[in-house]
Length: 137
Image (cartoon, rainbow, N blue to C red; front, top):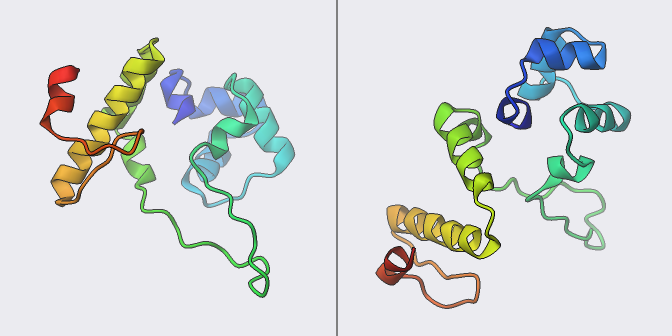
């Protein structure tokens, strides 16, 4: 996602890392694992901290008896992020400089998502969201 947001081709990223574009493609599709040192190199080329690649992942402490068991996967569609609409949405969102406006836009998108699924949504402060959120924005 970050590579596409900065307009970099897989070939250009590969050249910067000393890899073929096919190897970059395998990393992006999850066919090959990325080691810590390679992830660090990628972060530097894409001008982001390594933490960027872990954003949104919740780290849960291991419960005694479970050891290193993997958590249930989050309900998240990474393929959507790589579509034209996903990239445009991300670019437009990150272009919003006012953090309060970004927060309200995020609440709006969450509310719209809940409306589509028929659920109930809450704002960041725990209050119920409804039609007035759209009016405020």
